Length: 88
Image (cartoon, rainbow, N blue to C red; front, side, top):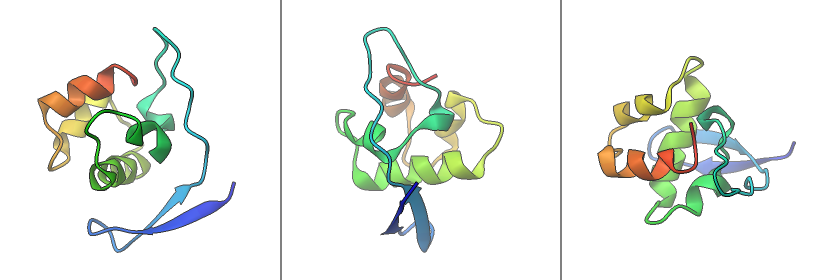
């Protein structure tokens, strides 16, 4: 797919697939490994910067469990709880 170039303070250059956000269905979660930026931006109090941190982390870690997101500076228990509503 096409890619959107975004500048980030985390990494100088990040390419993110320009994909439509997943439609979150009630009681249906998607794998954190398939997350796209639009999925994150619909979550309450999710900043663009924090979303980029998550996308970058997911793209650079092959073996990933959702709890690993706590390794990201700025992601705490409250954010993880919100993410677990949508992702596994």
